[in-house]
Length: 406
Image (cartoon, rainbow, N blue to C red):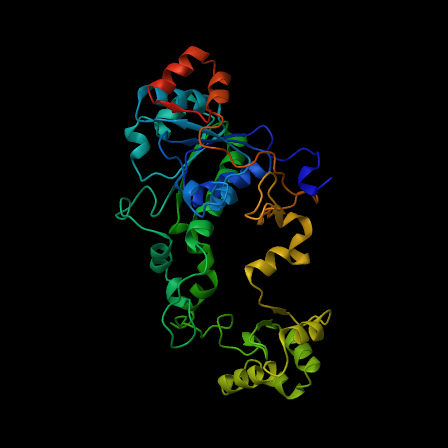
């Protein structure tokens, strides 16, 4: 039996989450909750649903991006602009533990579905709102995206080598680190607080504010005699030979992370350059040392360097692409990357890998219990669980208040 199919009690079993989010930050957060046992009911509009349903379509008409972010969820399609649709959501909120939304500030309040409204129905409810700049302050209603948030924190300015312009991030740092992960943390903190107080809470998640912990290291320079961090001039941003990226003879790259003296000394020993040991942190000659190390790495292929450093405790690993990462034996361990069940690739074989489970609890990972849902796939099922009869459901369907997948 595959690890993802093992039968064991997941830590969040019994938790009910309403997911009103779209795109990336919220859906990733709620998928992680679902991976570890929570029941996730994804609330989508009745017209197109989550826009990621149409991003990177596969040959089967299903979006690969949507599948990456929405397994272990049930889809209910509701028109929240209609009173009957709002009534359904209120009934769900009355039973839910957590609600997550990613609308602009004030949208849910205008619909009568904000925290103040829903907490009167369910004082136990944890309500998390993910926005760019938070619910308060002069930027409250300002539009923005991941790149803007990283720019305004100072993080983007540091993302380059010395003398270069800021570089476009390879992934959505603010969306995930400041949005998905901070929302997840906030929900967990609020759930623990609820155990103490018996009350829910409103969790204000700002993707801008959520990036602050990631600035702890560079921000230390603000109080160090006014030494502001500069691009490529920090110990871990390219200033040192011992912590850098080097091209190999075959045009590949190795990442050298020998920051502690013991690892740098071991590296120098393995490559036969004991004269480099004392130069690790010297201010003078830093660029020359980096050039010397680069020249060394150009003497062998990536595979030769991998073989040389294997089991030598040098902190030097190959820079591999995403395809290599997904099939690397290391990343196959403990369900880091998994095959999505029930999805075939364009050639009729197994699907490509999908992101797995980032946490282990007593050695156990998460589980894929539900594939990503079709738009409105579970509308009828969920409405019936709330006490709606077939005639009422059919009536709402005809009026466009709900959408079902059948």
